[in-house]
Length: 274
Ligand code: ACO
Image 1 (cartoon, helix red, strand yellow):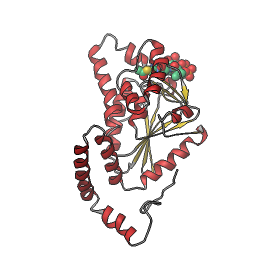
Image 2 (cartoon, helix red, strand yellow):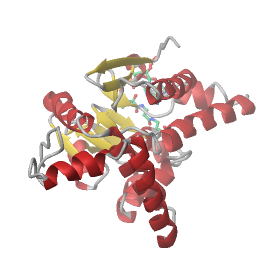
Image 3 (tube, helix red, strand yellow):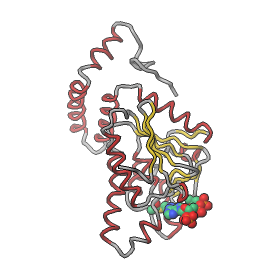
């Protein structure tokens, strides 16, 4: 598919998907939702992609849903409105959350409303200190709809979710890190470099181990203790098959031969540390 609203770039196993509507501050139009759905499907099965980074072109990460092309233009087209709403919800709320490869939101600037669900759907998030976040919905007489309220419930402390959701006040990347909405905030000038350090570290690890780590965490959130233990044991067997027993033979085997210390370094890779 030829993308009009996205740029895709792959370097060393890291695919960066860039929202590319800078003139509209990368607001999510119906076309962008279609293209994100297709792009995530493409990179999911792309053997050259080990890690996915999502960011925005220009001064904005994503200004939320396209208020004109979604809410205004589709006002009299309820079926199309529902269709786009479903697409918009699926890729942020489900596809990203259960994506078989690690994902990082690299928040370079404006991040409003619906864009919160992109950040929350990604496994990790790194923001520019200068970025501006906001649950702006109440400012235009709306509320955090679609997948956004659930994203807030998943990630934020109740006090923060209600503070920002009710007041609609913008906050910066430093605050986003303090309240745990992103993992860390760094100066915009070093955002790309710092994000790539993390992405390369992930890319150096066994992709099947990363996938199992994600699945075990994501799916056990909704399970009873008994089901999650059973699932984890079944996942262990799956991992053995997927990686041909590499975690026991090479991972544990090389430790037992005294070749490396897994507490401090990765097998055949690097650990940058905190
Ligand atoms: N939907 C549609 N168009 C948008 C959006 C949006 N969410 N955000 C910006 N644009 C468009 C503007 O209409 C404008 O288009 P135009 O040049 O054709 O007139 C263009 O992007 C630039 O916007 P400006 O407001 O001129 O840019 P500025 O840099 O001054 O401000 C900002 C950027 C702060 C992002 C501002 O545009 C804004 O407040 N946008 C709305 C953000 C928002 O509340 N998003 C909705 C969240 S709720 C949800 O997702 C359901």
